[in-house]
Image (cartoon, rainbow, N blue to C red; front, side, top):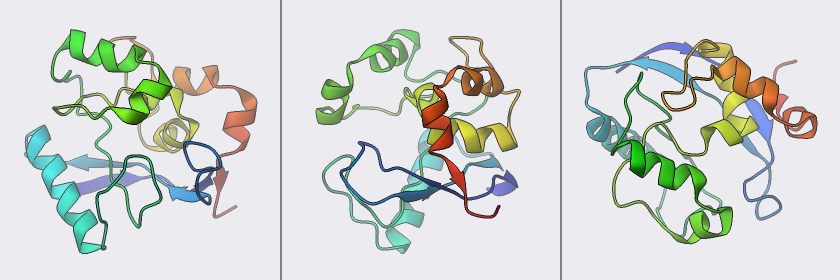
Length: 153
């Protein structure tokens, strides 16, 4: 795995809001020959190296590396991705997918993902919606975008 491009670091509110202090987010574009499940396992090993302990979902953690997308791949399939994309937030918080979901089912809803992603891959298109990262960014509410603050002005 090789990092081809990386965004700046951004200070962003924790999700869900108010449940932990602000966090630092960034997005990296990587080149790899690993398959998605292998890449995710590699990311989890890196988290472990930084003392990440997997416990309850959406709680404070030392490091959280997410696999957001791999080109135009959809995993496990279109119906599975659509299920997780349309699942109500309250239900998402208490359920864990049994398999890897790609692209990440909530990436289009999260300014803390979209803003840094716009620095490294503004033209990437979501395989379901057809929207680019730049278009998704333009659709997010101003207050969410303003909450994503670059650490290096």
